[in-house]
Image 1 (cartoon, rainbow, N blue to C red):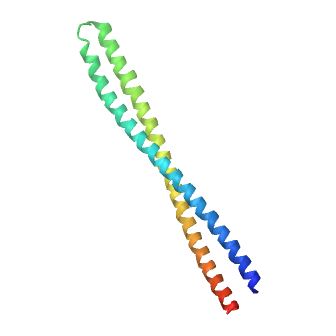
Image 2 (cartoon, helix red, strand yellow; image 1 turned 180 degrees about the vertical axis):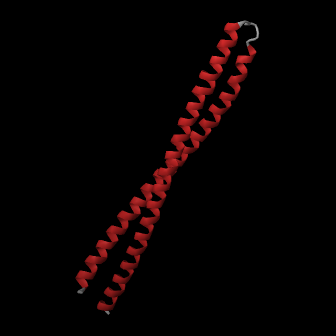
Length: 137
């Protein structure tokens, strides 16, 4: 290979390396954003769980209302409104957290693959520089 060809190949590998570094930086930014969102969802899940627990006590505080309608209303409210609705909300939050975990893992794996590619590019660039130096010597 001529010196010109080696320099052209080195420049090509350098550009490819820069593009790979940019993609890694972009993925790392997305990973951090996804982790922040995941943390907020985990906090929301805790809040909803506390709210669900607290809501079950609110119904017990209405002791001035007596009779069959009261017990029917309390049973229906507790099972459908509190346990059902809030359980569905918690389940939906869990599903979103699970999807975020999967996406974060996918992006982290891609970063690991790109870092391997980047390492190969660095080795190729280093070898090309050595070959250019030998020709110039």
